[in-house]
Length: 119
Image (cartoon, rainbow, N blue to C red):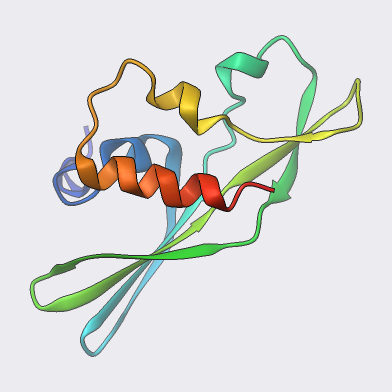
């Protein structure tokens, strides 16, 4: 296992690390920006459908807890897929992902904010 991923799991919600790739990071003086893109893994609840990757939703930015005196901003791009049968754009249902998992209060709040930006 990548030791950097293990470290990120300590600092960030594990589901964020599990379902998103880190696209890039920037450090500007006292601000750390982490950019995430949802992995191109078809959601389990839609695995019986014929889906193709169809870009991303608009990026959202969430301020996270400071790390080593730096402000931390998470820039998150959620993926969407095109259902070839219906022609509709679909995305992962984060409520289903979270069922049966133990979440921290911080991650529950993260999911709440994320769900507000669903198109």
